[in-house]
Amino acid sequence: MTSEQGKDELAAYLKQAPDTELLEILVPDMNGMLRGKRIGVGDFDKAFGSGINFCASSCVMDSKGEAFESIRYGNEDGDPDVLGHAVPGSLATVSWAARPTAQVLLELLENDGSPHFLDPRNVLRAARQPLTDMGLHPVIATELEFYLVEHDGEVFRPRTARIPGSDLPQDGLQFSSLDDLLDVDPFLTNLANICREQNIPAGAALSEYAPGQFEVNLHHVDSPELACDHAVLLKRAVKGAARRNGLAATFMAKPFAEFAGCGMHVHISLLDANGDNVFAGQSADGAFSDTLRHAIGGMGAMMEESMAIFAHNANSYRRYARNSYVPSTPNWGPNHRDLALRIPLSSPENTRVEHRVAGADANPYLVVAAILAGMHHGIAGQCDPGVMVREREKIDEIVTLPVRWELALDAFDAGKRLPAYLGEEYHRVFASCRREECERFHSQITNRDYEWYLRAV
Image 1 (cartoon, rainbow, N blue to C red):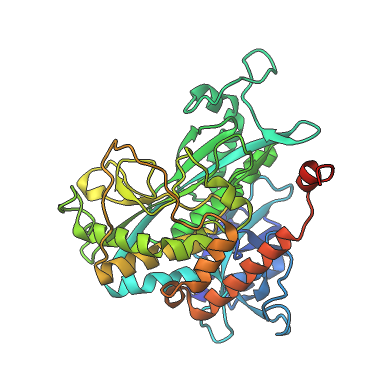
Image 2: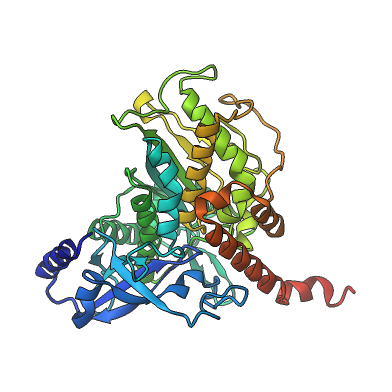
């Protein structure tokens, strides 16, 4: 976006919302969390013009918002600012704020105008470039699961639907229950309004396989960066709507041991220069092309070294449990939810693959970067995806992926393919940061230690 285009976008917004007092400028960090600051009216034009100063090390915080000691960025480099520029089309109203407030996503650039390598949007843009060079253009949508939670005075619990006419909780999971949706209708209505205000293309909402768990589907777009913008903004919108309704929302991968985890499912197809879906067609395995088979083969081949991205914190790995529709091996096939790589039921022109491995807590920019890297690797090398699982086929649950944090970090460190797509330096920084957070987490003594071992040993 040029400075003139940015100024025009800002002017058009302020014309319809002249009382705006504050602008929240947002940048996703390594965890996919949005970090930023509030600026006043006098500084609005900087973000839409020559750029606004932004601390680059904000992109490499741990999950608690603390700096890492194992990298030089933010420690030994003087913690410099870089320039933040508004992402076109992301300026929108923050309707849950107490004062008239807007928000906008930023992309970070060096002072010479080149992309700053710590910004996850820029990592994704670089990772998709090899597919662009092949004349292939991704079309992407995400599905995100989350819990509404409440506090009973002692612990957090899922927000359980109430029996009509009382405040008594309704027992049972009630998957796809319309009554459960009706029970939180004020929240869902607020969320739908926020999504309209913020141009987030939210589609279906459903109650998931646990009390208080819901899923919202986003419509597909032909820009990987935009699809991921929608994902992080949806998370923020969900939390804003929950706050307005006296609730909290979480996208933790496994907030409750006894209930289902939360995933981020990514649907992807590839279009050629003519706009035709290269996954449509016929192959020896079914009504999809060999190009799709090769893309699946590449994603499967790179899944092990990408697991530290798909599951990036300690809680992420609690989601990989048996009988949970959470994959633990890079299997694939049509219309089968037990698989890592599922080909959903669709018309030929909508043939796509659904990547089902990542948790809802993951950074969508990095998840999609790793997926596109796998696709390119598979198509370029014509990778064999292995034996296909047939529709309705019963499968044995086997674990071949590194479903423990340290093992995933080891696989990430040992990976030979992913660094070329993410950038060698970003790959190194990500590995160092996640390893340090892992060590920090395991250095803590929790109540569970005392419950299990204090008297016993």
